[in-house]
Image (tube, rainbow, N blue to C red; front, side, top):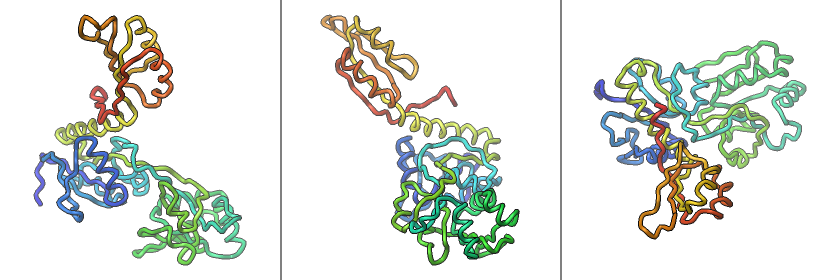
Length: 329
């Protein structure tokens, strides 16, 4: 396929994040159009943007070459895991997960990695991990003080289909290709995995004993793409649309009527995005009434109800689709 110079190449995640990202883009006015359920190259209504779906684990690495993708969405956990040299453009604040250390729920003694390391060392048993996060898991295990005390600087044995490395045969990390929660207790003893609700872990008789990290979906850019003026401006256009969705999720647009004599009582306590718009009601029979149009934070709304109930009439509340922070781009 030929890609011309006036095309921004964007890759978005296939899998659990796909629906979340699709909904987010739709709210930004960028509906993804798929020709079938097996389509990996949706269109977006913008001929200057080429899109392809890839696994989120792969996306950071595809943003580090001259001829690779210009922009992508993946979890910040995979950016860290791959040590990808990319530019984080925006935290989308969606697809939140926790990276957790889990053990079988029958292990009453285990409340930490230290407990597990000590127990397996005392029993002279090999401790087996399963995970998709090799880098994170190695750092987590090797930085543990009990591990250092038992094994010094010897790294755990890491086992993948392609190669194995690490000197410590007493602690082994097996690379997982999914369904990590199903591996214990037969294939491995414990796991390091991501979870949003923990329900799948509980269903597989596992308990979380440590939260190692947290992650959300982020918009990331190829640093070479940012050197190109056209691509850089196109990325800014996309960023402002996505920021508009994030801003809107935290705000409410309210309209209310208030008597002129009570206007100051409302305005002294009413927050606004900048300043509220105030106008007199039309007609000779308005009887000193004003209309207020403003945007407030969602978290402030409930605390404003006593004030609004006392002085306002005709309160209308909207959840905005987007609030574009144009001045920030």
